Image (cartoon, rainbow, N blue to C red):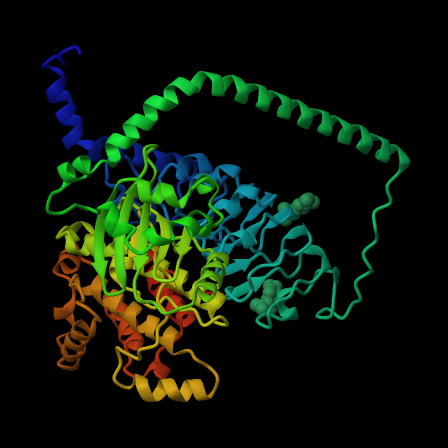
Length: 621
Ligand SMILES: *[C@@H]1O[C@H](CO)[C@@H](O)[C@H](O)[C@H]1NC(C)=O
Ligand SMILES: *[C@@H]1O[C@H](CO)[C@@H](O)[C@H](O)[C@H]1NC(C)=O
């Protein structure tokens, strides 16, 4: 390797220690460009806007809000008679942007599809302008969007696939020229919806009882019960003979292509096999070396205890005949080939030992790592276990870690997940680096966990499957550092801890045929996680101690004392920390019946999150 010349060092150090300035300049210039296009080059009459110039810090400009790390979060330019166009190329290169409002101006032109690059956008307010053209399909890929206001414009064309945005709270599009059918939004989640006075047609979707005709008036082409107009019966498309011919030709072409692909595939396979035969022998040798006990013991140290094969396969070894057949691999395509023998053969390391079993990390040659939970003393029958795992597999949410495979024998149950190398929430809080775990990250961790858990509770309520063992060490950070709930449903909750009042209520609920006690226990445990996020302290065992401590502090009106010092130092809003603490205390209510359900919790947390993102916009049409 070539030695690095000495002069490179100071320059790279300079780059390292002075990154903010150059980045700031780029952001500043970008914002000025955006403003120039939006205002059509005119300076607004409001004298405050003279603040927008390249010699000052953007965070001090009128209409711009930054967070504590001086990243631009909100750009709010309302009521300024701006008559230019929306330059998404500029504004969406400000990657920290969450709120963009340009309502009540005279902006014309369309929303460019580059709006897609405003990935973190949660609020987009473009209402009361002269926008025209389609709402671009890329809008539906803004996964974080909560509020989309485009009403009182001149938008036309069909709607993009907005129901794809799972967290959308409002969609207001009245008084435009929009056409096509109204898609089936998840109306249960929407708090505001209006598409009145457009040119929508076709059947009115199921509005879930939340919205009425008032949200759809002035669309003469709509039909259905709600608008008291019969929908015409669906006409089966008449296929012209000419079209049929074309179809036939296309089909024939498709088959030929498929055949060709098959032939090529097998030819390749034969050639490839011949070539690799030699290599395979070598590979096998290597594997044998890795599996030998000598290799295991050389890895031993305090923190990583490699699991010996005998410990891992203790109960299963005598049943080894049925093993390979009863590892059930679920829907993950990358893992289709996984065999129980592979799990046993690969080197493994003990990650943790809990009340209900042990967790291992299993490492494969090809770099794939799995986490294997081995559950002990669970009296569930293999059939019930299998059914349970399949039911859980049906419910999929981005904030819930999917099960890759499971294995079930009489005495042993294994559940396999993809290994998450970024660790758990517990580790982050324990790591002592809580100073770098900022308030807005904690708030979004809380909101994501709540959303994931709410989803699972909704999907699995009928089956009575709660999480059963929710705690911060079961919240794993995925590769994007988004929290994922792991080990969902691996424990049937039957002990009514942690609340002393639990017993009485449990039997009461069961008598009523609503065994929702386990779900209420999850909510208690979620409350404990909220406390951990707020206090930076970790709950031991069932979290009762932490909860009691916080309860007594609040009673004595020392509320502020409970918050993590790092949050206070960071300057997090005390008002909103107190709001989140109140949510936590509701979840920790000693009487399970009085705890809120998770949908309510999600709404409460998201309201706090929204206040965090935009304290100034209070009005909501
Ligand atoms: C809205 O667009 C239509 C064409 O789509 C045009 O005829 C009409 O003048 C526009 N209205 C306004 C207020 O810009
Ligand atoms: C929807 O918008 C129309 C037109 O502005 C208005 O008349 C109607 O009351 C609105 N509906 C709701 C539910 O707010």
